[in-house]
Length: 64
Image (cartoon, rainbow, N blue to C red; front, side, top):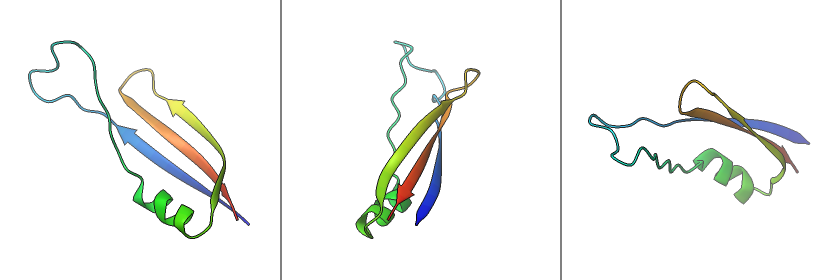
């Protein structure tokens, strides 16, 4: 059995921006964590970036 889970991540800079120009993105994928707790395993993952904005997607392929 397999599942595909897509996580879209978007980073925004608050008004005034960052003086160093660096961005820090933290996120927790609660749905992915629940699948892993239910016995699913990550078989493969890909990261798809967007070169125009500070967005990216992580595509997880899960197997059980």
